Length: 207
Image 1 (cartoon, helix red, strand yellow):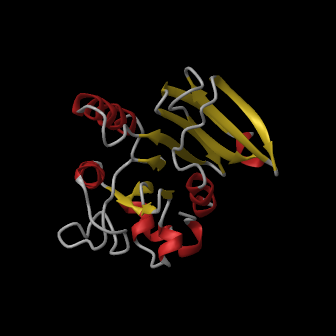
Image 2 (spheres, helix red, strand yellow):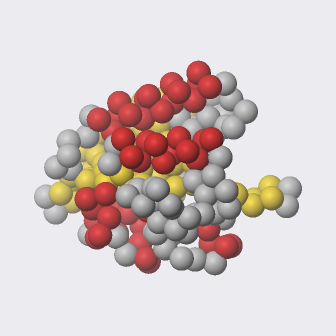
């Protein structure tokens, strides 16, 4: 069951919805989108749940136009799904630090006994290989790590989480999550608590 929820959270990716307001709407295929956006032009985040799970939503907290968290109770298990969208590479360091501080605060607010999933566009590259970082990521990232990617790894370490989609070997086309102007990158990641990583199977992460 936790694996099925992980698969759903992977489809979110913390991408911009660019929809104004704080609402929930059916989007077809028995799925429901919970979203939050400020001006409809930039940022905005959303969490997609199958309708069966959407009926079990206990709380939706829209933290900012870059972050929201949905708490679901399924079969007696509390599962928290965070959707996040980090500042782009060219943004000021103050904005990046504020975003990470905000995420730290949200994660700290989730009790350890509850499951936690993060689907986010971190706008960074964690890179391929994991020497020195084996406790938080696998070997199957993409290309070279940049400063923003190091922030993702540092976050995973201090919050005892793991970058799930680096643990599964996939073709390059399946690792790439953003293409523009002939360039390919991996900026979207799914994270879960390290203590729950063993329950995640290869087919449960679509990134």
